[in-house]
Length: 274
Image 1 (cartoon, rainbow, N blue to C red):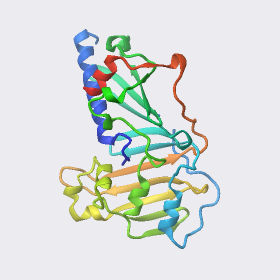
Image 2 (tube, rainbow, N blue to C red):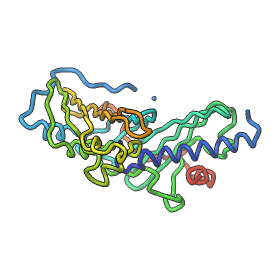
Image 3 (tube, helix red, strand yellow):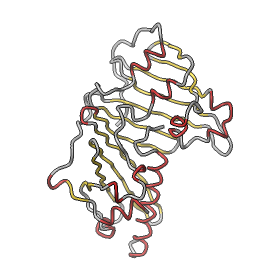
Image 4 (cartoon, one colour):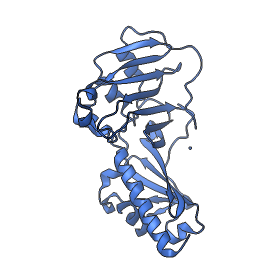
């Protein structure tokens, strides 16, 4: 449930490619993230236009830096959005069993520039084996096989919650900052692309009325949006969750400098391109 910051499917593909490359290299060499806070204080008063009130709570370019997380079944992504810097940070982690190690990958975007940092744990010397530095690596998008796979900053709503809410014919104000409605995952091509983990075609008519629950904190900011997707085809029922939190408390994003950064070596592009 993400906008085109590098779709969730693309990021999962990158993680799969990267870990496959890492695992193969390791074997051939013979080498054997904070909870969302929903704020305190009085809950928002019921609104005469619940849909408009809920849309007004979605983060925009006027908001301070904040954290977010998305959960799509077993997949989770964490990050930071800094609208003032047109900045985005997105993190994912993948565990490999054979051989056993963990790869954590973080992308940072400031306007048009993008960096990636990789952390490998579980096997001593793995960074040296893979010829991957531990520092931030500045990427050249022209050297990527598909530059659309890596994140870009589009707006302050990385989970595209506003687009989902707009597909609802009506939104119900359930009180205490809680709203409910039904999203139409077939509304347009952009919405369908947001839900790469969902077999929209298999859902049939059910895809046009997927129940959602949204929570707005006492500070007026959207705290969470949860879609309850029913089972369809070979897909089990699942929850798609987006959380926004730590408004004004999250770190502001800036370009890595000095000893923190270097240009990405050829090994980084080999990993990302698979």
